[in-house]
Each structure stands twice: as C-alpha cells, then as structure tokens.
Length: 138
Image 1 (cartoon, rainbow, N blue to C red):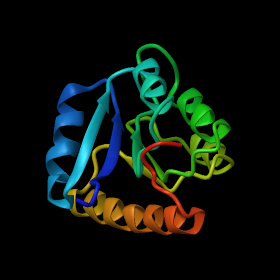
Image 2 (cartoon, rainbow, N blue to C red; image 1 turned 120 degrees about the horizontal axis):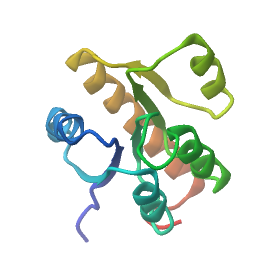
Image 3 (cartoon, rainbow, N blue to C red; image 1 turned 135 degrees about the horizontal axis):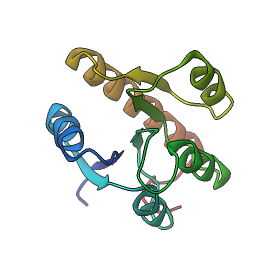
C-alpha cells in the first residue's frame, strides 16, 4: 500500500503568498490545499484534518482567529502557524490560548518558514501516532 502524502492547508487570500508558500515548501513532498477565504478553509476542514495549517489573520470573509477557533473547537490537533502582516503583541497573546504552533510576521525569511514547516510536520506525525490513526479523515 502506498504511503499517503501529508497535507498542508494554506489559508491566505493573497494568491501570490499562497503560491510562494506552496513553492517554498514543495520539497517536503506534501499535498497542498489552498483556501482563499475562511469559508473555503472551514469547508475543507469538515471532511479532512491537514497535517499542518498556515493561517493568515486578515481574510476577506472572516477573521483568521474565527477559523482558528473553529479548528480548535472541532478538536483538530493540526499544528497551526499564524502568518500575518499585522502581528501585534496583543494578537500574539490572544493566539497563545488557541495552542498556535508558531507566529510568523510577513515578510519572513525563507529558511525560517521551511524549518517551521519541517518541525511542525514532525510534531503532527507524533500526534497522529499517539492517536493511533490517520490525519486524513477525522
């Protein structure tokens, strides 16, 4: 049986940023799902649990915080990396209550994003093993 690829969900309304993240992380041998709105992300999350989520805070239809609340409210344990141009200390404090893996300000360093993704996918794999199941359908 072929090994299933891990899935990274990128939630960002900026098509260039979504493309950039997908290309920077392409060497990780993952499948990518792109959501340009919070609603698209939530729709995907109804049937799938990605191994990693990159989440922008400013989305056209809802706050990234609302998406984060839904992710955690559905008991999804996927590591979430907040990636934003609007990173205030207040926002940083607020996201800590939602068990965010990392908080990254735009613009970011390429090596940092790649390193965070590799680490987060390792954490995700350990969570999945401890639950004794696959991350694909929860």
